[in-house]
Image 1: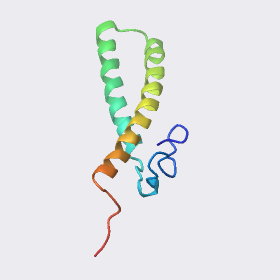
Image 2 (image 1 turned 30 degrees about the vertical axis):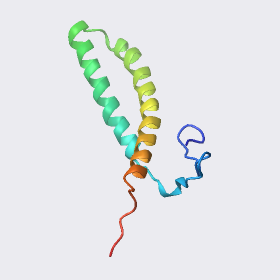
Image 3 (image 1 turned 90 degrees about the vertical axis):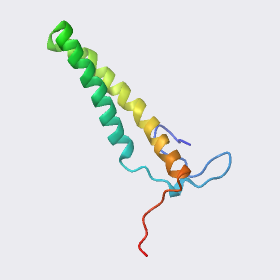
Image 4 (image 1 turned 180 degrees about the vertical axis):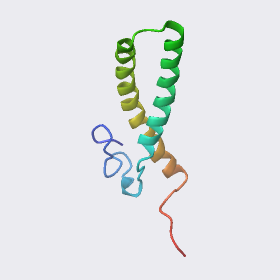
Length: 96
């Protein structure tokens, strides 16, 4: 399905399904920001109120986690949205 990290192939190599009709748009990035932001903010608040570490510890803890989770969720959410578009036969809106 993917050609590279998040670039979609033109068609399925197994069955020949044309992927040109699918477009996830900004949805994967939005879902990633919301999910990763909620998870990391919750964990950061827990660590702050439980242990009260210095600010540099927060930077060391959360910066790599934010980057890793964002990159992981981006590909996962893009493939999920594309599969949901196919399953529900979603397409562009048309005027009658």
